[in-house]
Structures are given as structure tokens and as C-alpha cells.
Image: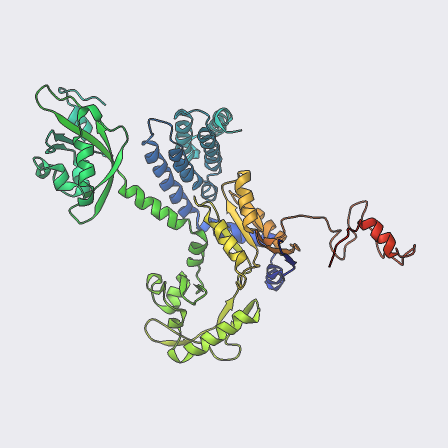
Length: 154
Length: 372
């Protein structure tokens, strides 16, 4: 017979919150934004390094279907998500999420094509310097949406 | 790739700064080496020409594989690239992923050509990124305050920038050392007893020195008066984007540690993976909440507030330990009237009908016969 115990331990976080110096939500968010600005440069470096690794890995495109290879690309793209937004590049974040969906789609059997990945990686590189794209950013993301719709799983 | 005997193919190819290229004679002697490969192994290209590629450059343990790969017959050119490490002049090992290239350089001489990609830098960069993936520790390490975190046995695992300044020593030198190294010898035994008492007390935190003066020890041997607090964790935030989803293993171990100080600490798991199966794994490991990247401060603050008001019970059974995964409406929060039409308002008052007899209750419960 399975033994199950249910109990209600003290919520230490609630105690910590009640003990903390009172701060308004506005002040909390302001301080958080300042901290994020502090690591913005480090996040931009992280994005650059990850993009370089992604491009290097993409040059090793296998001749035949290789799910492990797609997974290695997926792991690299994941590293962009979140860091890009903190680096002030939210559109790059969206493109990375889109590429993840495409990679999932390809890994789950939706063909073996390099083009949708190439398009996304090229877009990621362009979105690294979005200022030069102007309104082209919107069209670029729309284009990626079409590609994602075609290749994403489910 | 099929190389022709004529044309400036070598000059063109060898100019690449990304590919390592080598052309071998049929007996494995080097005919051409491009500057990139020569640079990787730290030897002038001219000094390599005329030497056996395998003997001169390949790491001992890989020579047999290398000979088979580079010098195998033309009929059986390997289709899959393989990693064969080379020795560099500075003693380093250069990891290169090689691809054999079919070549036809003339009717008399037969050659083997191969191109390779240097993986050394890539591996180093990946390792660096993996290290930077330990976001929790890196944030703590960047703290301007002196933050020292130990494992259960008192061995230092995090030593912040602020701690480096206060204790005047480098993080690298302190990792793995006992925390007692940071205090004068005469306080070490007492500290161990006090820390043990704190662990068993159940108190969330304690300001050290409430009963006795705290003295700490700099690397230089200088003693100084210190004010310090030891605490349990009120909130654990874990980035679970690692390939092995290791954060969930950690959370599961945390929840199952019957004597762990942080067993009931709320855990927020952050992930870029948001597939249903992944969220289920996080939930079933005992995480309180999962947040999808990218994060915003507002979203984070909301989740922390939710957790601080979380009244869920904890469940401990053979297959799961952690916050109750079943969400059940148990009426409006205490002290409030509730906003649903069915919520009862105010005092309930006295009963308006008689209590049920045991027979009435039995009829409702459908009792079954059993033997003691």
C-alpha cells in the first residue's frame, strides 16, 4: 500500500517578504531595470559568441538526416532566448524561438532541409544590429513566421 | 569535392582561414599543408612537407585510426567525418574534425587530401558558455557584498567579488576549502557547534555574533571584527535550460532530502523549453512554478508574490515529494467574503436542522464489510 503524507510547512518566503524593507512596486521594477542594464553588455557578448558557434556548427551540415545534429543546434539556439531580450534585442529573441520551433519540426520528421535554418540564422545575424533594418524588422519577422508555420511541428 | 590536377586550386583553397587542409602522398608523406593548419600545430608549413603526417602530427593513441582514415584506398573514401587530434608544438592538443576529399591529381602520382575544422576553440567557447550558464552562482559571485556559500559539510562553493575584497584573497583559491579557514583558529570549533545548532534549530536565519563577538580572518592573517548572517534559502531560482534538464534532478533531490534545510523552500524553474512534456517534468520534480523565458521584472515579481501567498500543502509519498500538484478551490481566502455568487457571506450562524444519525451517515457513505 502506498503511504502518503500531506502537511503544511511554514511559508518562509512569506516571512521573508514581510520582514523585508517595504518597497513600492515601481521602485522594485526600477531597481530591477537598473540591474538588467548593468548586465546588458555581458548578454550582448553572450549573444555574439552563441551566434558564432551557431554559424560554425551550421557549416558542418551532415549529408544525411541527423537528429542529434539538429538537437545540438537546438541547444545552441536556446542559449539565445532570454539573453537576447536582456541585451535589448527582443526581436532576436523572437527569431530564436521561431528557429527552435522549426528545429523541433525538422527533428520530428518534417523533412530534412537546410534552407529554413539558414534563413533563420541569417535573420538572427541581421537582428543583432536591428537599427540598420528600420521597418524591415517587421517584414523579416513576418517572413520567419511563414517559414515557421510551414516547418514547425504540430 | 573532386580536385583537378591543373588550376590554382591549392592557392585558392589554402587561403581559407577556417579550414585545415592537408594533401598526402600515397605513402602518407605530407605534400601540402595550408597556413591555417600549420598555425594550429605551431610549425611552419615548409618544415612539415616531406614528413609522415601521422608520425609527425597525430596524437599517439589515434595513429592507427588516422592511418586507416587518411590512407585508405580511393574505393573506400570515408563518408563520415571523424575527430582526430593533433599535437601542437606548445604541447597543446588540437581537436580537428576531418573530412576525406576525393582527389585526382594526375595519372602517375596518387594523393590523399583532407580538410578539417578546428574544434578546439569551439569546445573552449562551449565550455565557457556552459560555465556562464550557471547563472545562479554567477549572479551571487558578482555580488558586491561578501557572500560565501558552502555545501552541507561547510566547504566553500561560492565566494563573491565582495568576499574577495573583504578577505583579500582570490575566489579560485577559496573554492573547495572549509569555511573555517575564514575565521581565527580559536573560533573554529565553536563555529562548527553553532552552525550545527542553527541547522537543527529550524530558525530561518540568524545574525551571527548575537551571543558572542564575530572575528574573521583575512588571507593576510589579519583579524577583523565582522558582522555576518547565516541563513536558509527563502527562494530558489533555477535555470533549467541545460541540455540534461539537470535543474529538475536537483529539485527532486532537494524535495526528497528528508533532513534538508531547504526541502520546503519555494523553487522557481526558468526555462526556454516550454513543451508540455518539459513542463510536466519540472512540475513532477517538485518545482512550485515554471516560468518561460524571456523574463521581465514584472513577471518575476508577480510570481514571487504568488509564491509568498501560496497556501498549498506538501505531499510526501513514494513517487513524489513537493508541493501539492492538485489545485482545489477551498473557498475564498480567510478574512475575505469572496467574489463568487456561491460564496457564503458573513457568519454561518447556528444549525437550522438536526444532526444526522450514524445510520443516516452510513447510508451516505456506503460502508463495506471487513474483518479485523
